[in-house]
Length: 344
Ligand code: CP3
Image (cartoon, rainbow, N blue to C red; front, side, top):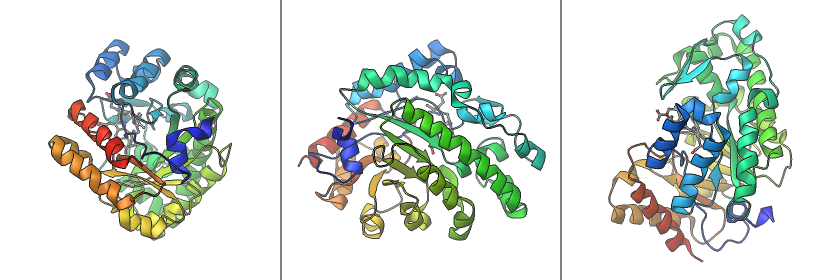
């Protein structure tokens, strides 16, 4: 049964025999086999749109490390294409027609996922049956504010100053943009659930750049709306992740998610005291610990597991995506340490 997967039980704080573990960006450039498959596909976006090869890279870290979940191989930005946004990766994302005026936002379409991202359904149709006896597939989407940051800025940014200028100067327009992105994201996640994902993660990477008041105005209601609009409530647990979002922890726990994803600067014990009665927690090893030697990695893993203690309700992960320079053997050390130290 779906609810028997270790990671689903941990998300629901049900009994577990050990702490489950997966890693953000686990299919990626630090793996030589990923780089080889990407070269076969041509480039990153072509890989995302090639169901056989995308399924192949999704499976690579599962086979190599024995992780407890697979995550759909895609990017948070790919579903923006069907809204009319022109996207490429080099490898960082570039948006060629950034949203700057009311007319740009009015022109955004609300696409049917079957037309917009048919490759995502096709990848899942390969992966879900293939993995059924082993691990669940996690689906994901970018949260509306984080998508807006890229769409307004035209790519990554340190300050996201154009995005903030738009949100602060023209709040009504910002809300229109958030409404459209919310509608697209809700549909997109339901499409993934219909194709068999057993858990979803909403990435709100950049919501940490907002103060609590602005978060309440521009982000919280939309995230709540997405979670409330998902199919199979209670069955498909929802993880909500923010990078640098400690000021939002209580709000995050009130969005309707089952699991709050922590970055590495957060203290797991403090987060547990604050919101652990409401939600399970995911995280939160500093991704750069994987550049240290195996002894250090094992000690740091143990420190985090000790903060959780024996109770269920913790999914081990890094506090952000794994870096492309990491030695895969070091990730293996981390995964094995989690399994060894957390055995009940
Ligand atoms: O986690 C996984 O293994 C699943 C696939 C996945 C990717 N991106 C693949 C990817 C997921 C879940 C993401 C999420 C994502 N993408 C986020 C949220 C998480 C986070 O990192 O905070 C964001 C902000 C993006 C946008 C994005 N896509 C950036 C900033 C970059 C460049 C990254 C870099 O290191 O230069 C990408 C490209 C990208 N997405 C790559 C991968 C494997 C590397 C591209 C390549 O292989 O050429």
